[in-house]
Image (tube, rainbow, N blue to C red; front, side, top):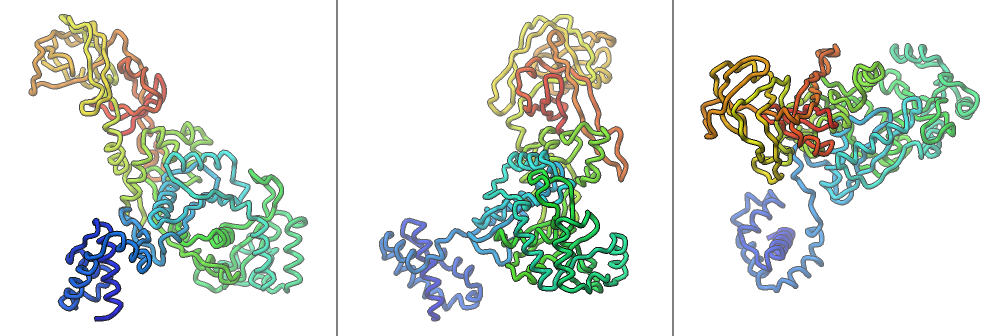
Length: 568
């Protein structure tokens, strides 16, 4: 029998015995040996006697000596293995436990949304899966679009999601390093400074024509490079990579690496005016930060070629780049080009408007972080477009919040009901049918509000049950409607309706978010405001509490006079 096989069997037997009070079994070792060396499956009859022999030897050794031999001869077996319980996340090629480094690199040019959540959660899950590190990096090299407000919003959003990162940094803090790398490319002839017009550059790239600047010598490029910091104005000069103007991949047709932007940077003010574009900055940062696996959405897939070429030319370490699909909901676009005008034009109330896919909006709507994580991990790791139905996120959310959401009565489009022979002054109602969330006492005087829908469906002579109270028969349909108590016994065959005591009812409005876009058109009716009455207990609940209004749906308390509809 091969010595390698014997060694493998002994290591597995020692590990299994040490995990089970010093005793192992043939069947346990056989399955693990085949798992470690699948090629032995065809030789199973041959290796069974060996396994029996080794198991007998190991079981004869005291537990402390088993552990000692395991530590000295098989230390690799004691290294924690990556967890594989992240649904939808495949194992990473080339990943070593304890050495995986991922990064979440948002640009602080807007509020974080569900797409950011997907990226951050995937980055974090893989880092934890392999016992590695997650770097939270602001890719802030375009001062035209970046604001301190967005740095803060992204940080708040990540913390709310519960994403744990091991380091925080800004790409803009590495500008001197980036300048050094740009200069290296220029001096090596891999980049040049182009002073052609924007229109000319675009035309040449389309027509695969090299511009005259590409033929400039080192002296010309060096002088132009230095002039970019003081002499040239924005748009007058850019650093371009010397790529392949005949490439089928348009990204490689001498792409821009550095450009001039005179806008003040949120952190560095006017300290810098020459800034890298995304392709250049992200390649250098990923390599310098020790990133092993860089995840990004599939629209960047064609940019992988320039990413790797830059690192090749600079002689820098290359991470593995992996793509996944962009995530957005049907009718809820995540593009900043779409969202910003909606806010600026006042078509939505702000970035926390419950119709939006931003994290602030989802939080305000009543979606909890755990539901978002479960939702993201339920999606397969694929490049196929993910236009997920919002209902799938709702289903995860519902399962999580159900047991902690107090039940309250609500009357939407309220109609008044007078129970003429009411003698009850008070009723005690449990706040949740299964979970111990306490109870509340509701004062009664026979005057109630019921929902307008229920009122319209009732006729004189109809019998219904007022939930948690008694059965009544409608004696007069009008305004107000009148009824009389017919008994206390529960009757399964009659309708059940909710109610609110009229004497101390709390008037609220419920914001009901609906689909934001129908096709490419903004839905002018995407937010419905419903007038309602609810119980006085509503005022005792904290803002942010998720409530299940019985027979209506889950809502989040937004203020003393307003709730936001979460979902059914």
